[in-house]
Length: 289
Ligand code: NAP
Image 1: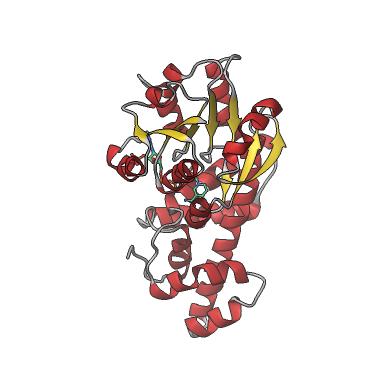
Image 2 (image 1 turned 135 degrees about the horizontal axis):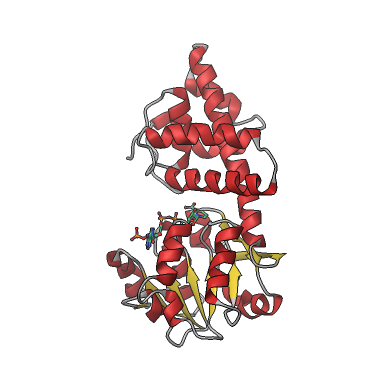
């Protein structure tokens, strides 16, 4: 299938490569053009504008930082909206929340085919094609593009447009809570004078074991190479708070996690892995490698 791809950050690059490896013909675009070079070497065509990625394509993926980035890429001059024709689907995989994708679809109009397909999993899963793809949108469009999506991972259909984004916010609400809980446990251990290595030996075999095991080496070394940038986790916790507010429910643990993440961002840790919040809470060192 001929496919476009806009947004070659950490996740987008890995996902676009999977599509190429699955045999799709790919036109790619990124705001910072240099990031397209490895994909060009792997056989992708590099487009000069987002609109050009849609030329002759059956679908165009977007994998961008946040709602503002998606709106820019869609609706700026020579944006993707200018290139989409009826029959060329927009498949957005960014984490932007249900409202943002519905508002893009409304702006594109009733002729447009839009699927929201945010993903769970990080760079290793994107590279291996083992993401969880939470899909929302018309069933016939999903059926048409399911084989393409399956190059990225396992597809979980949730219902109408925005429902994939809703599931993604639910999934990420647990990430923020778990990581800040780990941070508070480490802070308590520090305050009580315990040895960090011994503490982790216990935590890895406790109910928070998956989180502690995954991030132990980062906390112990004080270096946080990003798989998922802390600034993006802040964005997700804000999206979760907005969605809960709109639905009229209170998320107290979510608010606590949001408080800690805002502190970590203010401390300058936005480009580190999101687990650097543990260091911010516990007063430990944190830097890029
Ligand atoms: P990233 O490495 O920071 O990449 C962000 C992408 O958005 C880059 O292509 C960047 O372009 C582009 N961008 C940002 N602002 C823009 C703007 N104003 N105009 C045009 N392009 C803009 O982020 P990522 O880790 O790939 O994540 C992408 C999305 O997937 C985010 O919504 C994130 O929350 C979600 N996600 C991430 C993970 C993960 O583990 N990393 C997992 C699941 C979902 P430049 O290259 O020019 O900066």
